[in-house]
Structures are given as structure tokens and as C-alpha cells.
Image 1 (tube, rainbow, N blue to C red):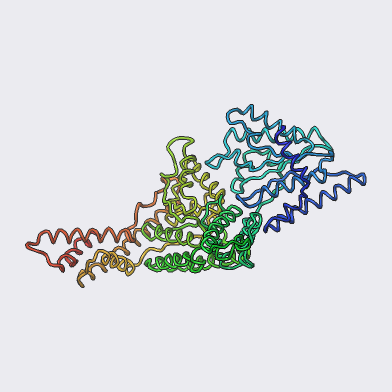
Image 2 (image 1 turned 60 degrees about the horizontal axis):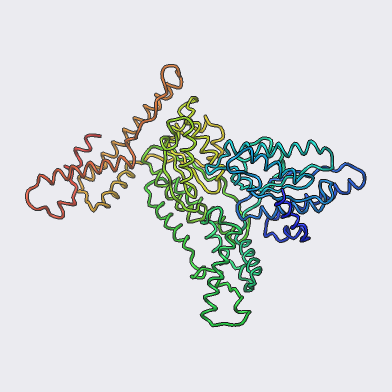
Length: 606
């Protein structure tokens, strides 16, 4: 193909040493080390060939990373390096970098196959660079469909054909490919032949806040600006970069974030020097630390107030002492990790943050999930922090082929936040539940593809959740945190009731309060009886599996926050009925007072 050949011959004419791209990279020390290892292997191969020995052909390379992480720079530098070492033993080899238009026809697979063959032929005896291959074949739903698979298979087949025809140390072709790290697995699973070709992988790390600051300084110099001494190394700037970077979309981080922040700094500097009326070149081109920081100077971190607000909400939740202890420790761990990253230190890692919430309905699982999602957003773990609630009906479709699409749509809405799957044990009802299995498999795949942009919580009854985990290998490792939401005690139920009554500006007479306490004690006792009976039935069913189908869990439990709300609403209706029978104007005390006569009939129905 003429266009890519001319484009890349022009790159060679410039005579830019390949080391420039590598040396100029900010951070990515492990990647640089890998590149120099490749360089060392090429040198040794060259010596072997000169000594009359056999020189091995270099490995093909897959370079993965997020947008702006430098993956294209690495690919280009390695391509130039391979050319400079004459890696295929063909003098004057080319580095060919076809564009998407050079490789894919939008409407014809046959024409796409011709384009691929032309590109591979042009690169024969040289190096073929394909930038962002994942964008070429991965669809919006995160999958590689039939046309994409056919394209990948054609590419792999053409490369393999060249390799087989050019046996030995001379000739052949070296393939260098970049891809988004979130699509790495789906890309390689879509085409086994391509996976075999791309045997060596380099993963680009995200830039740290200090590295983004250094990149801002470099971009500023390239535009003719100078940056105040020490400005990009200030802790205030690093904290500010960490704040905005953690909330940015995935494709707006790393080098893109450096560009965005520099644009904002230049805009502020322009306003500043205009107001000053300065005319000297030095002052017109100087970016100060104040230009790089937000208007408040990067002082108070608004996220700190948001984090504290989340913790106040958490402490206000009735009961759940063990859950609260976990949330406090998680907050401390994530806050420390954020401070380390802002200071340019390596992250200690938090592991997978997906969780299982087990317990009866109405024990606060959704409330706690919403608080944790907000806390994750405030800490920069999640971009948005929204909570998307769903159950089996929201993920499983009624027709074949629609479940995966339905699940993908729900997960897409949850990206940047938390997906709360209630009654998660119902996702897969049996070994023959193909629709439920498809939903679970699709969800797990998207959890892996978006592991840095999504937290999933599975919620449900404790016994049923344990069965789900035991029957599906791999779930336990993906959901390492298991929180048990204990049933409320009668004093805790009373505490919840008093809060609800206070919210509506109602008041309990002493006798009514005594009846309410007695009613909650009765609720708790009845729940324990029901649970013991259910446990005995489950044990009997396990001992005699052929005597009947597995009993589904109860729709609700009598002793929980939801039951308290229903009970209080029932009492309020009784009060309203009593007041409706009163003649004459009602006093303020009449309107707000709950009496024993309002509580007694409701308590007798328990």
C-alpha cells in the first residue's frame, strides 16, 4: 500500500533515533526495562548472525494500556528499533503503519480481506504496526462479533502465511499491535490464531499525579512556555491532579488529562498577564503554580467533606456494628492509597472491591451499598458513584440471544458506579437455566473488562448466597468481601420506629411505647421460630433430595426495617381512623399523639 509505505519511509528519513521516544517517556520504568531487554536480544542476535550462528526472529508484540498511557509511543519506538537492527535480515526494511481505512472496508468483508493482504504484503520483510486494534473490532457492547472475528482471523492467516513462506532467520514479518487494556482478553479470546501470534505482551501503567505534572511541564515547553521552578512537583498540584483524574472518563486520563489541565492553566495565565498589562516575553510565557491550581489554590479538598458526610450517614444506621467496622477500615485503606498515589508512591492495591451482602430483606443492605458507592466516588475509586439496583428480571430476557444484550445495557448504566444485584441467588435457578447462566457469564465478563470502573454487590439470603457461590466456580475469588447483615434486635427495631415517628413529628404516649416494645419482641420471637422451621425443612430436604423440589426462600421476613415501616404506617392509619370519629376541632396534641388504642389492634395482628 503506497500511503502507509510513504508515511513510514518519511519517518525513517528524519533519522530520529528510536531511543528518543523511550527516553522521553514519563514513568513506565518496567516498560522501558522490557524495551531495552528486546534491544539486548536484538544485539545478541546480530552478533550470532555475524559469527555464523542462527539468529531468531523477534517476537510479535501486543502493547496494552488505557488511553494516553503511551502505548502508541512504545509501539512506534519498538518498530523503529527493529528496523534499525534489521531484525528480519532484509536490508532497508520498512516500518509500515496502515490506518483503519487502510485495513477495514466498512461494508465488505471481502474488500477488508484484500486490504489486509495488501498491508501484510507491503510489510513483508519488515515491521507491521497496527494501532488500537481493539477499536477496529470490539463493538460498543464490549464483544467481538462475526465481522470482527473474521477480520482478525484473516489478519492472523496472512501473517502466518508470510512466516511459513519465509522460513529461517531471513525474511518474514514482525507484528506490533496496541489495544485498550479493557479489551485485551476479549480480543485474544476472539481469535486463537492471533493469540498464538501475539505471544509477548507489554502492559502500560496509568500515569501517577506527579508524572502527569511532569508531562504538563513538557507539553508547556513544547508550546514555548516555561513553568515556575518546583510548580509541577508541589504536593498541592499532585492532590488536585489526583482529584480530577479519578473522576474523569477512562479516555480522558493520563496524557489527555495533562493536556486538559495545561489548557486550563494557559487560559488562567492569559487572563492574569492581560490584567497585569505585562509585555516582557519572560512574564508572557511563565506559568506559575497558581496558574496550574484551581481558583481556591488547591486548598480544602471538597472530597474530604463528602467522605465525612458518608461516614456520618453510616454511623447513623441502626445496628450493623460489624458492617460499620468494615466500612471504617475500608475508608482508611482507600484514603491511605489515595494519599500514596498523590505523592507519587506505588499503590498498595486494594484488590477486588466487589462484595456479597447476605441477610434478610430490610436489614439495610441497599442503604449501606448506596453509602459505600458515594464514599467510593468521594475517594476517587469510582468516577460517579451512582447505584444501579437490579434483580434477575432486570438482567434476564425472555428470548434467546437477548439476555446478553439486556445485561450489557444494565452494566453500561452502572459504569463509573456500583451495580447492586438483589436476590442474586435467583440469577441461576438450576443447571438447566441457560438464560440465567448467560446473564451471569456476561456480567462476570464485563466486571473483568471494566474492573477499574465498576463495583458489583450481590445481595440475598445468607444460605442461598452460599449455595450460589459454591455452585459457580470463580465467584468466590471475584467477590472476596462477604458482609453479613444481622437481623435487628427488638431494641433496634424500637430505635428505628422512634426515628420514623420523629420524622413525621408524631409522639408516643408511654402506654403506647410499652405496647410497641412488646410488639417488636413478639416480632423477633416469631422470626426466630420461622427461621428454625425453615432450617429444619432445608435439612430434611437435603437429607431426602428426591422427596420434592427445593423450596424457594420466603418473600419477606417479619422482623426488619421494612416490617417496622409497615407497622408504623398501619398504626398511623388507626390513629387517623380514631381522629376521624372525634367531633369538633382537634388540638395540636390530638394530631401528633399516638395512643395505646392506635397500637393495640396492630400489635394483636402480629
